[in-house]
Image (cartoon, rainbow, N blue to C red; front, side, top):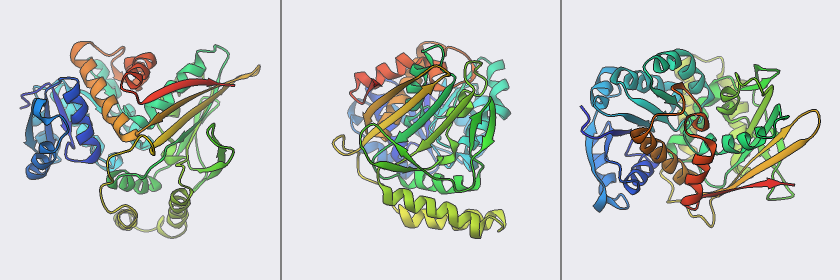
Amino acid sequence: MASNPVVVYGASGYTGALTCEFLTQFGVPFTAAGRDRARLSAVMQKLPGVETAQYDIAEVAHEVDALAKVFSGAKVVCNVVGPFSSLGDIVVEAALKAGCHYIDTTGEQAHVILAREEFGAAYAKRGLLLAPSTAYMHAVLEIAARACISHGEVDTLEGVCAPTGTPTFASTQTIFQSVRAKEFYLEGGALKPWPAAHAAEVSVPFTDRTLLALPWSGTAVPIWFQDDPRIRNVKVMTAFSDRNLMTQVHGIYQHYHANLAKLPEDQQQAELAKIAASIQPGMPPRENPLFHRNWDSVIGTSSLGRVRYTIYSHCPYQQTGLLQAFAANWLLKAPPRAPGFQSPCAAFGADNLLGALERFGYARMAKEA
């Protein structure tokens, strides 16, 4: 049973440690949970600000009953363990069983859809929040999308997430496991699949060059707006500024559909995991704001015109840790704006999320000409 109000599951990973760091800055006591006590202890001892952190450690198996027992007594579960498409549903179920709000850091559209369809009603019935993707990907893009929608005639959104940097080991595993899932965009109010191994050149505000972009699982954004009566069409693509990285990832998508898609599922997963490990074998260094810059841009259109908002930011993994901590701190003090399955902006307000990023110096939004 948790002795603290927040449980960070996956606290020993890169993003989990950042979540704990920002919880410490908010003064929120937390339980650092994961499968390896020794590793958790080692990470916590090196945590920036550890001298003021209020925390304990819980080693737990990745099973519903074991996790529910650790979560019991807490109010919020921050799940930072991916790939979510293979590991996330167990944690969502365990948090519900323990009576906790649930937020996570997934970028996987398939997990977001599963969470909504399998658990959304049950969370709503108990007055609990279910908010996957409370993270840089793609809460920041959602903020820009909401700004476009504030212009009442807008019914179509096209977004590009353009980060700089290298995905962590866990993120890389997630990217390549997502190769197996269908990727959807919203057209005419209905979800439609992107073509297999789709790629496109996209324009972004910070350069005259185009970037190579991929659907990147489809993102959560079309799912968040699927039932919004104002919005008919949503397409979102991701374009890391490193073209070599994007070309490499696109090549793996092509390789999968040409050579792996007909293999048994366990063989597919094993082959993709090996490829992912060869690309990012370890943990990257802490992000540098002079290098790890991001541009999240959304164009909103209607029959009568267009509007574009861009959020200029830096250090996406640090933003994710901040957003997790901000959301957890909110839920300890106030209810979400609505229970059940919600987007980060629907749960906490776009202005509040942007305000948190601005206060910590991570982001600024601009209306583009």
